[in-house]
Figure (spheres, rainbow, N blue to C red):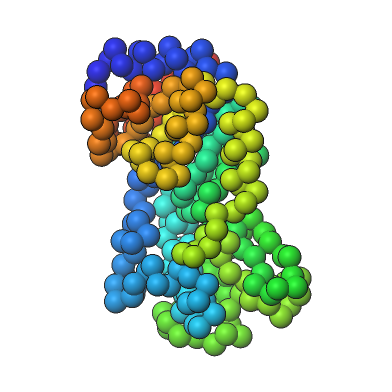
Length: 267
């Protein structure tokens, strides 16, 4: 690692009053969405994650998401999750916008009011009934019903999680499925954070920051005069690009992020 680059970043970090973190795909031993295996190797996970799939076979979709919830609960937050949680506790002008749905940031103690789930969470539930507004966050119960803990893929709809409020509607994971819009309130809060004052520094973690939605946020911060730091195993940038990050730390973000934030989170 270039020690001068780390020193330069840490100097900027200590002088930054408003900071945004984006991404957090650092490894905690979880398979990626498209890498989900086991019973699901013969299924296209992308076809299960749709409103249409849930309407056609809610039991199959719930079994898939129950296994994902279980895998996430067996994983542990890594040092990057804890470092960002500590930074949030140190500064009220810090916000994490995560694209992960695994709940690890919450389990690391990241303050909920400084954590936005862009794609929802496996541990947030909502009722599918049109007339019911029931929602709950951070329900880490597993399995949600006894039938979901059994190996049978196709179970009765009556054995699925039902809404405790209306009692008739099925619950579903409150994640963004293919074909669905990103949660409006979440996007609005992220937009408001950037609009309410200059963001001095954006930490782009586990992604290059060159594709949507990361690119949109990095561009906005850069236009405000803020700095961009990328933490990722794979970094692809032309050295002559105008949008090149101010700092690029290539490697495991779970190790790099705590080191980079050390001067602030250990004050």
